[in-house]
Length: 146
Image (tube, rainbow, N blue to C red):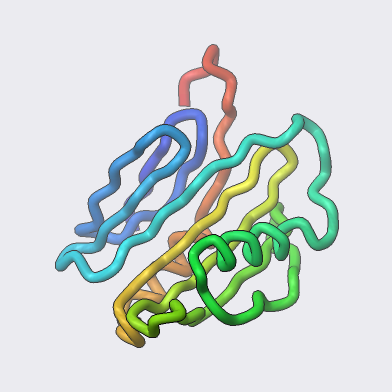
């Protein structure tokens, strides 16, 4: 997959054919064929504060509640850098949408990633999870070029 860069925020592997737009602290990626959407939101944290145990799961629960999605997140774990928690196949209360939500807690920022699709259609789910796993934060200093 080709690399995509959100300057001073992150770099990730983007599947071919996906189109990305950025609005303030949120990026939206839409696959070819317009089936579903991925959103990545960035939340800045106090520099140098280590993510605490349970923080990623709290982000996932809060987003699920905000989106009115049912299902509890999986147990929090670490993954080569961030603390991560993920909710898979959460259903909207009306049953029309299925959501995956992941929170990645890094020392200076948190990324909350969501993927929404209609009902149980999940052909792109593997690509989405690969995209999330490839996220690498970039230097946020405006004085350095990324």
